[in-house]
Image (cartoon, rainbow, N blue to C red; front, top):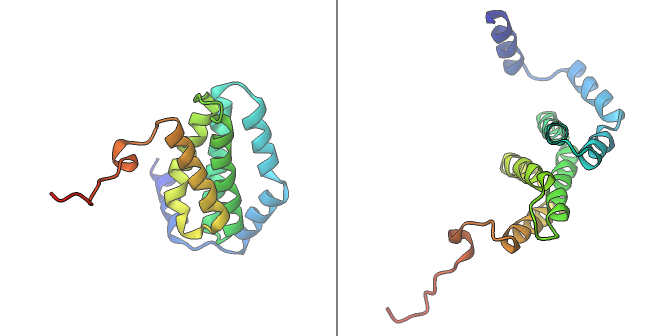
Length: 149
């Protein structure tokens, strides 16, 4: 156990080198997004769907760590679109809940990397949450400051 924590500490303290960047490039050359999407969309077992979404989150983390903003941006868009599409019928399916949790974790973490398309996907997600009455009242109700009181 002590050896593992020492290795983990060493990896977290050293900046990524050429080998790590090459490893990420090999992973991305294998097109993991279509494979993860296929698992997420076609398998009906919650653990498999959750594991596929964890794969999306991990790829976003790796992309951010290595400065590949395009990877992060496309993954966040996909996460938000999964929620928007799967909950558009007015009900929260298992898939929509898993994608919402992942988007909720990913958006604040990687928000500085977003461009217009990613923010549009996030706003679409918020609008869908509002339509499903999932947002807390302090986010949806406005105070009227025009009164004389």
